[in-house]
Image (cartoon, rainbow, N blue to C red; front, top):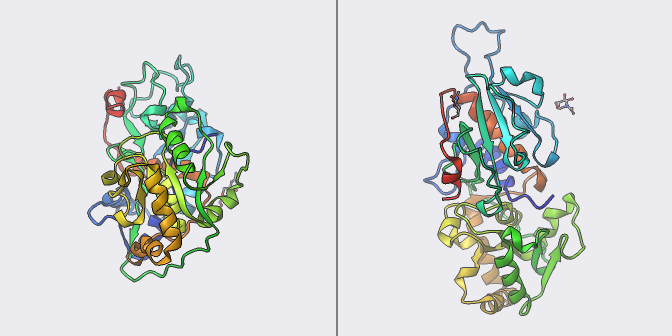
Length: 357
Ligand SMILES: *[C@@H]1O[C@H](CO)[C@@H](O)[C@H](O)[C@H]1NC(C)=O
Ligand SMILES: *[C@@H]1O[C@H](CO)[C@@H](O)[C@H](O)[C@H]1NC(C)=O
């Protein structure tokens, strides 16, 4: 499996810290989950022993075959608004079916059967960027809801940093490496050409410690974040450049206390998700050589380097507790939350026109 390009950790934190009465960054953007009322109050007529009826959400296939315990939604996110199942025998009762785009076959033969129960909603579950999306014909008008990293999806799962009301204590992790990059997918046909070219230019001027398939030194899950934290800079190079396509490659380093060097969407787009002084954008420099000079300069000037962490006084991003490849849990739990609250009729028209625009 390639590094899946989604972010979980900070979202997780956002949930955790809501309990500490914090608000998300930036101030004017509310996380999706705050906009919707919690459905924890049973109708007044419900006898105390009866549970309010929860809609059933059927996970049609496990994304990337990565299995986990559905009770994690309650454990990690306190989401318990639906009955999550992977039992296809419940298809005719399922209020919604979550369909993972990457698993759909070109002939559509592995989609759920027709006719679909009239009350049932199909959710288009897709987390790759448009560059890495199979445009399978026949799907355009089958779905009712979209689930994506995009902010304009019906179910938009974004990771947002948390603004603290109380000053944060932040301790810079010990650093023994300057620049690191974890990369497994270097195939130019998946749109990684831009980042490979930039990396090649950059590595002529500065040493880059590489982990992953490209280098043969594969990191174990439990070493992923500690290794990232031991680097002063981390190359947060997205595999393709699209609006809102800002993944765990960015949030991971931000939360562990490493400065992300980003290549991806515009700086403006990044600043909708994190403070502008928390990261370095490759577009801030005329070329890779100038960027390398800046990084080498910061290596010698500890005070200047530490300024990249000033934002930590107001925005919290404590190290996360879940491992990096659990991001599908976040998506699926949020679909569950959404389905538990929104019962209205809905159609998603021409998903490709939306997604590829
Ligand atoms: C899932 O978690 C619940 C609660 O922690 C536990 O009771 C159950 O046995 C777990 N199921 C599996 C299949 O591990
Ligand atoms: C879901 O979308 C399909 C396709 O547009 C539509 O035929 C169906 O009526 C919708 N159902 C619900 C419950 O929204």
